[in-house]
Amino acid sequence: EMEVDDIASQVIREEASSLARMDLSSLQRPERGIPPVSLALFLFNSLLIKDNLLLREEDENVGVGASLFVLGARHPYPETIFPMLGECLRRQKGDLALRLMKKYKDDSHKLGLVLDRLLDASQHRMYKYHKSNGVYFLERDPILGPVIERGEKPTMAASLSYLLKKKEEGREDGNGGEEERERERE
Image (cartoon, rainbow, N blue to C red; front, side):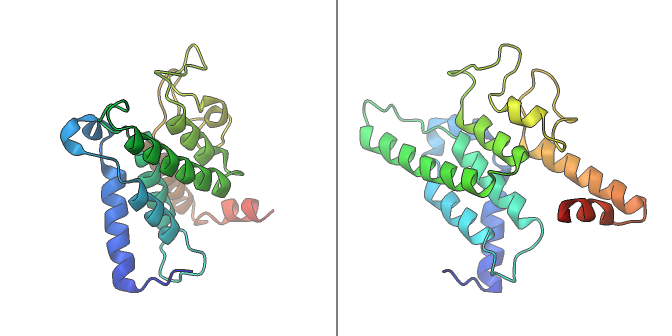
């Protein structure tokens, strides 16, 4: 059980959002170093605590974005030279992936994003006409389905922009998203 005060939660939010905003290609360069998997595990755990009253609405998306970034990042060192490093990162990423899949097992949108990061389409191509291996879940999702273009790889940014657009449309209608909340309760 972790207790997080206001100052610590602000620092956690800043670190998670900076990690979520990083470009995946920037971590591919050798000078960037090893992906911070332990940091992502800590950020995921601390931003998704149910008992923490200091959490904001967007904290979950920031935590998931940071976790997805780390899952998709590759370390720049050859595994033949540093086998223990590769095994350690693989094990930590596996732990992070299991936590993400356990948390979002009923959310096809986030589960599809996790599977897309885990299953590298350049090595394990499951679908002939699509760059994403998580497309089975993503195309059938009511949130991301309309956003995904055929053959394109989904991103957390695309899904968040779609969610924000839907939220704004709900506010313009005057109901403030009450209908969606009613549907979720049922």
